[in-house]
Length: 257
Image 1 (tube, one colour):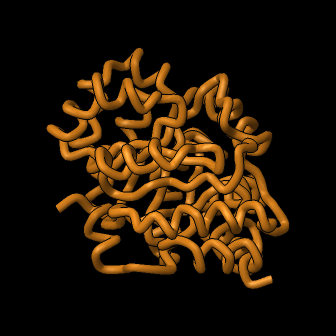
Image 2 (image 1 turned 120 degrees about the vertical axis):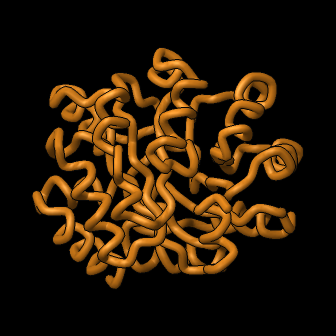
């Protein structure tokens, strides 16, 4: 069974997923960060593929991607670094990146490498759902790779139900239509959005991401979804701490306040 599905079958709530950008803060830190995140009790990891034009990302992740590319990170190198990771790491691993680098690599080859390295799912923010259905779904399904689709407050009920029908693993609920980055609280409009989606009784579990950085936003997320995805806050702490174990501890401290 795919590790993502297994996670959501065995743990229905309070799931925590962390995002970081491969090759940041140093070129060779990726595997160490993954291992330390798992040791600290995190449930799932999203490894970012750096790209020069990350349109859905805020300044923190954009800066991390820029530094990663300057460090020399590439998709080919990332897969090389991930070889053997499954000898030491058991939790679900996803790659998150934009379509351009993946297409340059070749989607079938990309999926082959995901299987070889033990990647369970992929998040491609700029992949149109129609293109996913027509060009990518069959290949991903054949490789048992979950393609995770994003929804926002502007996504129609019809589109959400189609995503729920034709994808597997979980649905990534973006908390707002803005780019990534910390928020102090989720306002009434976001709460209505969370409730609207929950009232649809979807087949897939949901994870909420974008803006989770403190106790208030985390608690709101965990009331309205299976778990939280934290990116910008962790990436910032990772750079500040210079040590991934310490960065996770610092994040836990922030989420208690």
